[in-house]
Image (cartoon, rainbow, N blue to C red; front, side, top):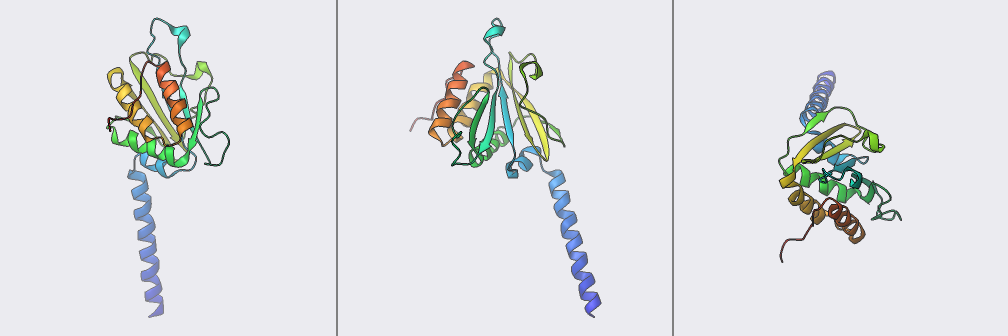
Length: 180
């Protein structure tokens, strides 16, 4: 009798683990990355097609602790924000009904200028990477500023919001809060 009980319990555990693996396999990269501690988001947009030397460069969002002195700072192309803020941005992106190209492996998003995607004058590239996968999408020029405004509103740290607003200004977007 004890052997039967153990077999039933073991079978239940095996089915449970199998269901969990299936659920993970069917989740989008955005859903999987929302749970990751090591996640990166990159926005890249260069609307100045006639001024290639004035390209603002990408904005790469990296998570740090709320006690980290880098929080809200923007050295080079990076902006350091808290992990909860990064997860909030991932939720905004997931709700934006964008068509994502997904990969099961992580992608290196912090690259030198020659490693950036080419030809982003009429769309903004958004890329996400975490240990369980990566995804990227192109946002049409007319949708860039509304999306960046939603991302801006999801930030809670004042320094991070200021640094993000500064970057969006370099790509000719003025981000705003909705009217109260």
